[in-house]
Image 1 (cartoon, one colour):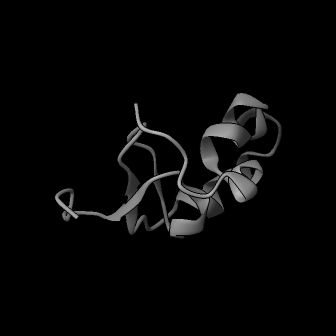
Image 2: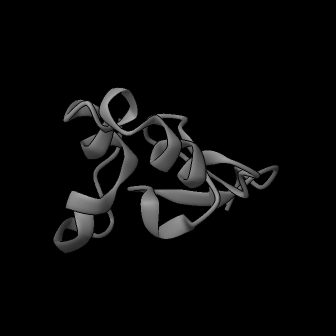
Length: 65
């Protein structure tokens, strides 16, 4: 696994939110973050519709970037 490219905003990243149980406590809000995904995290493989929600984002289908 790589490191987070934006440690100051790590608190808003999916890996942190999921570790805190956000996906279980607030499933509708979580669904809003991952619906129609445009980006994938090169560290953990999670997907999101905003790259600011991932530690090491790259556009889906563009893993080489």
